Image 1 (cartoon, each protein chain N blue to C red):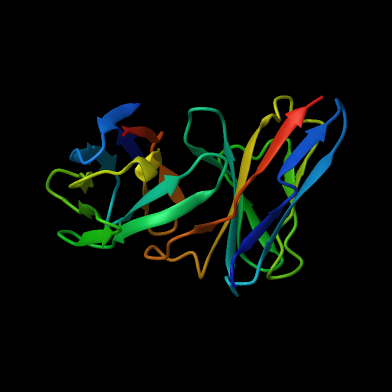
Image 2: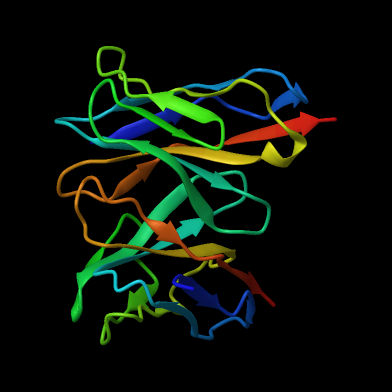
Length: 111
Length: 114
């Protein structure tokens, strides 16, 4: 079946550092890929998405490119802020299926 | 504003008691979902509904029940058969169950056992 693997956290960075959170997936066909963010005590918010190979999703300074050849969808941001501290989930959605989530990666940004 | 409302935010259950978590959306979405999140873990699908009066079991449906009598409402009942109900429960909806459609989430209900 489909699966999503994320790097284990927590990831601890200083403010203005470069962020990469790795995400790889296993799926048949042509899934859509998503990044969600969860702030403490809240639900998930859609951060960005990509629906086909080589698409780049972007939002709030975050970017991720759908790489079919490496089955990856790594999340990047050039300069993180304290307010970016949260848990980030990579997910995929395949035809006829629901969302499949990775285990989440906690990001902690220190001033 | 359109969105998904889950209530209550915190809920306590006694042993052997059924409890119902509310989820309402005014986004006019056809599909709705319930997930369970345990500490430090990802989300697991409990039930989903692609249309009114229809719903399907997810990966961990045992000990849970749902109904979908109205498009905007998808309540989840945690029954006494669910032996480890303490978790954070998230409701979501999407325009349809299509591949490209993202899911929009409520703020969750945290259920604890007394």
